[in-house]
Length: 512
Image (cartoon, rainbow, N blue to C red; front, top):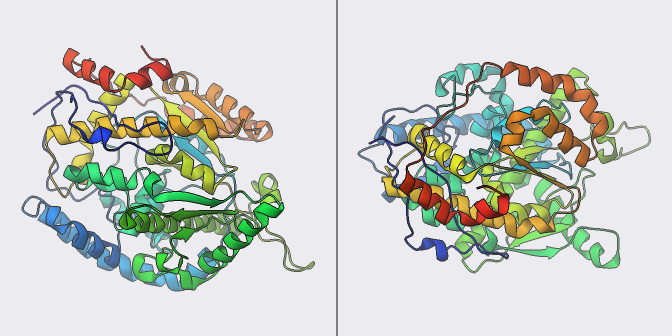
C-alpha cells in the first residue's frame, strides 16, 4: 500500500461540549492508504518509561484489544521496562518526592496550541532557547518517574531513539523539548488520547473520553481576588493544596511518584500558586460517566505532579549553577521567606508547555491557570492533512500494539483535527485580552524572528526579548541545512473530502 497525502480532522460543537455523537457517524473518508512497516521495532515507543502498576492497569483494561500475535515482542519489552522503571521510580520517590510535592508552580505558564503538524514543535524549540522557561525534555517525558535520578546516564538509553524523527527528519535527542502529555499517558496507564496511537482501532472512545474531558468537568470557584466571594473558594482550594501538594503522602512510588488520586477530595484537584497558596480554582470531575470523571482526576493529578517535577528540576539546576539570569523576571512570583533572616527560595520559572491535544482543552487551562498565556499555531488544512498522514505512515507504526486499517487511520486523523479546531474556537473568546497570539505556519517559517518579536511584544516581554535575540538567532542559524518535507499534490478525491469535512477551518482561518 502506498499514498501521497493525508489530513487531520475531527468535530466538536460550539459551546462547552464536543459533539462526539455527531462525529461518531460514518462520514466521507479520504482514499489514502498506508504501508505496513516497523513491526519488529521496539525503539521510539513512548510507553518505554511506564512503571509496573500503570502497565498492569493498561493490560487489564485493554489486554483483549492487543494484537498479541502481531506485537508480542513489544508487550514483552514494555513489561521488562516496567519492572526496571519501577525500581528506579522507587529510588527517586525516596530521594525527591517530598521536595517535588512542595514545589510551587508559576501561575503564568505559556501554552503552545495547535494541531499536530502545524509548526508547534518548531515554535516550542525556538522559545525553549529563552532561559527563563522550564520545559519538559524528551527524556523527562519519556521517563517521568525517574528522570531526576536517571538523567545523568541518559546517554545509555540513546538506543531507544533514532537520530532523526521519522516524520520530518528533524534532529532527535533526549534534551529536546517534548510533549508533557507523553508523560501523563505513562503515569496514568493510558488516561490520555495518546493511547489512540497504541490501540488505533479504539480511537473513537479514547478521543471521546480523554481529549477534552469536557463532559467530566465543571468549575467550582473562581480566581481568588481578595473579595468576600473569592475568600471561601481560596480557602477551600488552599486546604486541598495542603492535602495534595505539601506532603509526600500524596504520592505513590508504584505509580512512578505521581500524585495519588485517592488523596484528592471527591474528584477535585488544584494548581498551586508560586507563593505556595492555591490558585483559587477548583476543578471537579462531576461527569455523568464516573469512569471518565475518575480518569480526569487521575490525569490532572499526574499533570500537576509532572509539572512540579519539571519545575523542581529547573530550580535545582539553576541553584547549582548559581544562575540568577531568570530570577529578576520571576522575582515577583517568589515565595516569601519564612523569617526575616531567611533568604527567599528561588522563584519558580514559568512553564513552557506544548502538547497538541491541549488545543482541545483551552477551557480547562483557563480555569486552572487564569493568568496563562497562549500561542495558537495554524496551517493550511491541506498541508496539515498531508503532513499528518505522513506522520501516521512513518511514526505511528513504532507505537502500535494493535494494527489499524487504512480507514481507521484516516477517520482518526479527520476527527481529531475537527475536535481540536472546534473546541479551540468555542473557547478562544474567553482568553483575556493580550494573552493570546495566533500565528500562521507560513509566517513562522518565513520570518521566525518577526513572529517572536510579535509574541514578546504582545505579552509585554520587550526587555526579555532583547536579551534572548542572540540565542534565537543562533538556533535559527543551526537549521540552515534542514530540508522540510515536500509532498505530492493530493489527489482530487482526497482534497475534496478534506475541503468538505474541514470547511469551517478553511473559512475561519482564511485559507483558500
